[in-house]
Length: 244
Image (tube, rainbow, N blue to C red):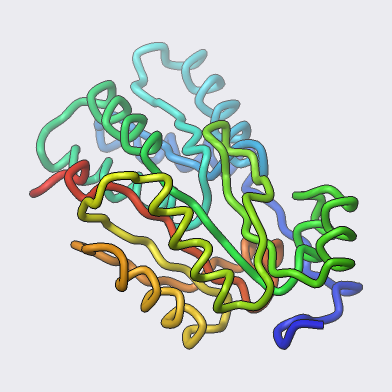
């Protein structure tokens, strides 16, 4: 058992906001007479996108001229956060919604995602990854490396024995993904293990030039599914980030 594993028999439950909550929020924001771009974590792992989309459709029936777009980020945590930040920059530059969506779509295609923990049991318990993969990982006693594909689906990217080797393998995978030696921006996340995140950060800094980095704790819902001890990185070419 890994040092961060806990009992999963009493995991908290997670739930997304309902259609009514998005409806009320959109109505309030429309009073400011500005367009709305609502960006959400992957629809594969959450119903938030669909709830927001349903709310948009109700409002459009009431007011066809209302300018609302609901965007599936097909990512989670700081992956979604980075897209929100870039959309805000685009807004400050005076870009319209179509231009903004085109920009964040392009950026999303260049994302490298990797998360690791001592176990897959939390993802398995929440139905985010198959029981068979979880049992295999436990039987072989390795640290899984999890990623998210272009459709926003979580999948097992690789594995390693031990945390340090998992961090080093993540860096190797980053080198394979980006191929050329380029400057990167990073989003680094952790579930209550900042010291482990620092170890991952050190391994990344050995091999890459880093321009900007954001460090954050995983949110409550994602911590439930990832489990305590989770650390991860979202990386993308810094040249794609808007300057303001």
